[in-house]
Length: 156
Image 1 (cartoon, helix red, strand yellow):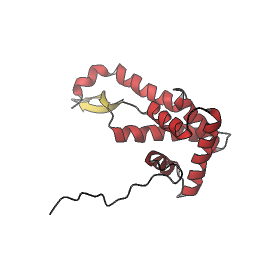
Image 2: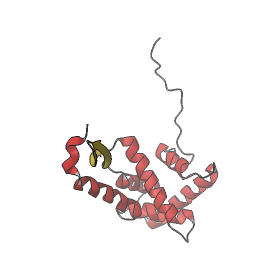
Image 3: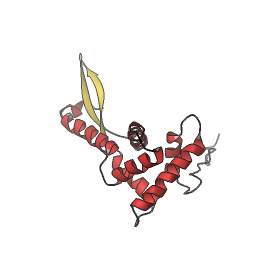
C-alpha cells in the first residue's frame, strides 16, 4: 500500500475569519451543542475588543492573548521510590494551546454578573495586556516549575 498524501479530514476555520484557532476556541466555548450561541458570544466579544483596542484587529488581539497565556513549562507528578516529586517538563504545542483555552474559559465562567461576551472580552483584553486570571494561572504554573527545578533530573 502506498502512503496517503492528502488528509481525509478537511480543516475549516470559523465562518467569519477563517481561523482554525478561533474555530477551536468556539468549539471549546460551546455548551450543550449550541454552536450558534457560542459563535455569537465569541463574535460579540471580538466586537467589544474592537472598541477597546482601536489600532489592532480583534482577531490579532485574540491570538496574542492566547499566546500570552500559553505555558511553556509545567510540573508533572513522578513517583520515585516511595515519594512523589513535582517534576518540571516542557509543554507540547497542542497541550499548551488546550491549556490556554481551558484557563481563559475557566476564568470567564468563574466571573459573575455580566453577559458572557463581555466577560470573555475583558479576559481576552487582560490576557493581551499580560494580566488577568488566566495569565495569573500561567504565571503560577511557571513559578511552580521554577521552584521544583531541582527535580528536573527525574524527567525522562
